Length: 210
Image (cartoon, rainbow, N blue to C red; front, side, top):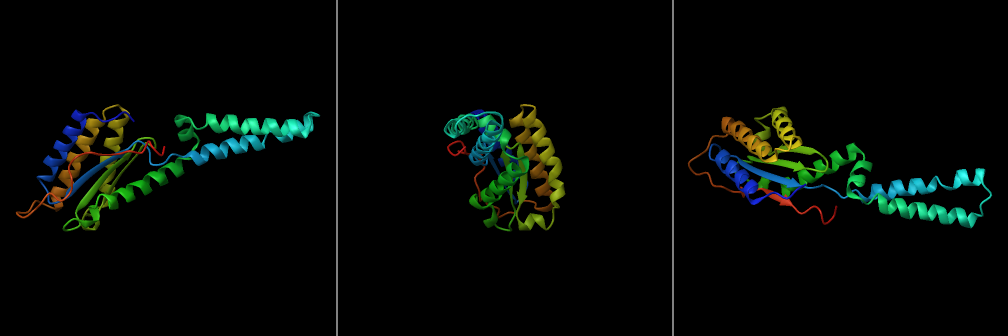
């Protein structure tokens, strides 16, 4: 994931501010480069390849056991290092695991950003994890009672479509605008509404662990 520029962050923050002006709900946008490093899968595949080395050599050659062992060790080290390359790590991890890790990260961020503490329980998280090609909207209890989870599907499809086309800023802006309209329909602004949560784009530093 390329870093978000100041201009991108500014236009997304403006979109959140505009959307929240029309509703008593709170919108938080969180993005991360990756929800997990998936290093265990790199080690797993390197170990499996290394385990496959001895059998054909035992049957087809008369190599000493010591030589076979050294080749097996070299195989593990070679692929163990090669598979640490980031694109390879993501390719080796099962898609179902990647989606599960990204979903878990989204739930963690819903709690970490205090969306469950808003007045009226009307917080909404728009979460994107780029390495997993994953996007999710998580709404708090107050919204969940009035807005079906299926309502958010079109928002997610449009957002991921823009990101895939290299138009991530436009995608976030449209997703925020749609989210604001959905919230305004059920949760119009009140006279005593306060902006309880930050409007800026939250970018997680996921690359230290990736």
